[in-house]
Length: 439
Image (cartoon, rainbow, N blue to C red; front, side, top):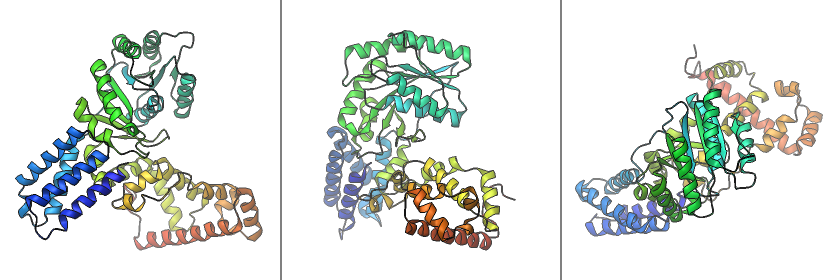
């Protein structure tokens, strides 16, 4: 996301930096180019115009013309204004209540059902909640079954009443069921349409009145640009929702919705969806998104994702094996699994400063580890635990069993051995790896 906007903004600032002398005229020219970049990213024209005017006023107030590094000052001003445009700071979700009820709204195809599962998974694992998913889409074929499949994946119960075609009645029964069964959180997945219509609005307004939700979230496909902003306004006029969810940020989207929606509806963006996996959900941080737009990456989010997969006891066990040169393919397979849980690989790489531009035209497949995993899984338990057993005939068998060839197997074994030696050397040079809590 934002790749084209990032490139355009970078070019704009290069124009400014390339000037021998910074003047009000070339600052104005730079901001004109910034405004064009925002418009190309599908940002509302009025918002883009106001944004550049605000940047100019602030830049002049900071005396950018006489600054030692005027280009850097301009980047800081633009960063601050982008952050403010997207809401300034993150906004938490309200999950107080017995049970707390979250009502999902949005058009068909926006990703409401999938996001409902992601949100349930997140609040269960990170907040200790006991959620109940509610299937109130009685129109879309297989909508109930889709929610059941998602619920099974994350081990969260799903309430559905396929004998009823009344979503208001289903929602009321679900809240009652939650109280009786100890579910302290109810997430209601509602029906959508291909476009806003009166029937849908009346129906979701009736559900709101019946279950009195603590939180109403509007889910929007970020790839729809300005159409998403217009739809958000219509929903907000009727529902007065509490926050916005942007889905499909891992897609080829220009980012106009993220930059415009806060100004139009004056409601915070609370979450973003960054992939198909149930773990592909992030709290929305305006300042971090501004960093990514300006090509600075997002190391904080990257570290947070890594910490979510960090297990202190496992790290201690792994350290002991590395020191003794006993790191094996079971450990290697486990580390691959932890990396995959962190999310979309290209999205992770884009969080590294400067990597987004370098990787723009590179296709990073989420199945990049598939061949490696196939080779390891084709080994016997004894071979995984003791790689020294892997002679020529065993390698041939593994290549055949994994659907690869002997060259790929040999390459993996060589890389594995080099990695093992490097890890052991690093561990010895440090005395002990710096693992929190390791004594």
